[in-house]
Length: 135
Image 1 (cartoon, rainbow, N blue to C red):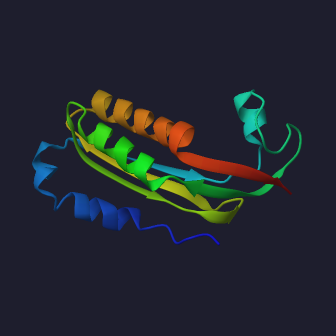
Image 2: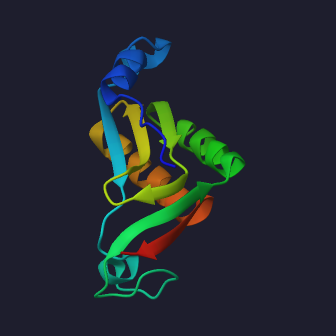
């Protein structure tokens, strides 16, 4: 069963209360959701799941909390990154359900963009399990 995604507005308010907020020139948010187009189709690679041309009806999503925590700590150690927060859903998700929410705050745009891309990539490639279900 899908969990309730936290409020992005509340997260940003909390981030601006963090002692590091004076060093942050920007915050970026990533909100991943379940789409109906199969991963194999949009990425152009073979994977376990729904075949290209078919529709995704949902997915089973899970994650390794220790791996996610380690990825967050590596991201916090990047130059110019001062705030990192991650929420991951789990269980049986439907098309449109939220998969993840990631917030990164840092000093300048290139560093924050790179950190967000790196963290989301690490989570997706090393920390989670996604099994698509055909519609």
